[in-house]
Length: 140
Length: 288
Image (cartoon, rainbow over all chains, first blue to last red):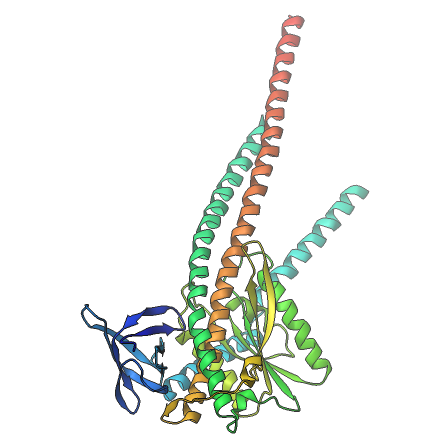
């Protein structure tokens, strides 16, 4: 019987931890859970909090997670960690921010002249002027 | 001698420009390597989350999440378009805009309306000039080291629109990093989630879910979509750096050949003026 298991802690941005451990304690949403090898399969959401990792012959390791998911299989435990603190209102705010940003930029279009387009038109006009001058010089 | 002098100032100004483009090339090369590393680091998360989702979907076939159901009629689609914040990176942005526009045009021809969510200021500058397109959200100024929480906002706008039935399909337009020399624009479908072949196989065991399967699946799916978009943004940074590196390299090379040409012209002008002076002296001496 296995006395240890594989633990992977990954986030969308990077891999945080990967190794063989004896036990892991995690702040699950329904209360803290302690996972030992041969645990029954489990998927749970995590609250922001501390993960405690026990590795044989080494000091306990503590890793902070700001929420996420814990997936448990008998020999493999995976923590899908969030990198940002998530809450319904916070997410809502971020969505609003992104919307407003777009609206502000779109308003610009109506009030002011688009500078890129203005520059292009200016360059075109200048080229036409040069052409006219050349023609004049050639005739005179 | 005035012609020669002019050429000399021109050469020195081109040399200065060449220094800048060389420096930009090297900066882009080192940033590209970092971006590539970050791109690879996003892979384990995406693979793992996909596994759990597939398992869940197979074990709970009676619960169909809206993200997984294809809708029969499509009235409005969403596009998340990823672009860079800064220019000087060749045709990178234009290529992705072009292929997105082509797809958008196809939808519009069928009478389907299009909503856009744009990441990166170059994309905003491009699409705000097209008045028939509706930009619903935008994020820019993300920098080279992008964090997840900057992606959540614009993605959530689209996910909410999908859940509420405002859009019936969601696409992602970004650059795919093939290798340093090649970046290919790619348009993929985010929602409804493309079906996986593996999903069909039977499972003999199931997880315990806390709090329950539905809630777990909901939050997993949101994170999954976000992680794909995040990866797209990181990949786009790698593409941006690679494209800039190539653009700056060819700019430096061009500057080099310009300098060579000018140097030749300068030498000729100098030689001509010396010859002229000599012949004047000789002519003057002969007259005396």
